[in-house]
Image (cartoon, rainbow, N blue to C red; front, top):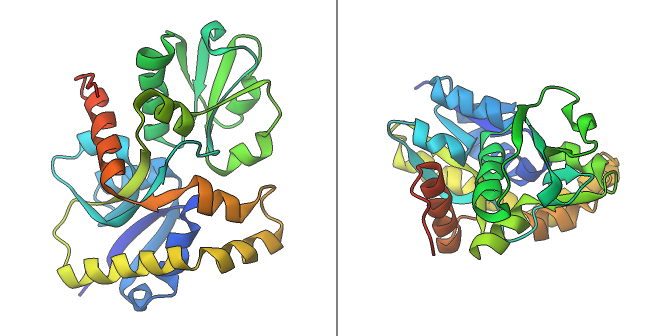
Length: 253
């Protein structure tokens, strides 16, 4: 039997998942790659992997799919790593540079701008170094580990997890485990157990990462308080609401 091909996001927030997978018996049965969210999405869309931790905004692009397991990359309020940086208040923003690493955060920014912030900026596609273009009335959406170095650099920082919660009263799901194939039930069960094992080991995992000095943040606080991993009923409701906006239905509570 060929190994199941899996793509996982290469950010700090997915490290508990990676830990759980690497410390499970499944690790010998899979082919694992670590990618940016956009690459995870492309690999699933182009059938280069069988299972991916993908930005949820790609779900409408898939002719059929299944969400696997009980875990996701989510937030109930502030996520601290998906941030719109600006030198001016929201109402004064005229253009927004969009991070090229994730479709979901890009679409979430558009939804919030239209339906919550009530602004109509010019949208600009960012490339490497785009976060340095925050000046005047030009803002930038930055996601992932790069946000940690930008803390307090700009006058305004709008946390998209927090803004979504203020808008809807619901958690937000940034990425979840998705397959376009029929995976064996036994594999799904063991995979979910591996993810759970990684979540259970967050304290010691965070301690080891902190000791490495790689990140200028409180790693335990970030993983334990700002990232919410359980794909529970409220997160599924938040996901459904978000997908409704993407479909143009403009769902209301």
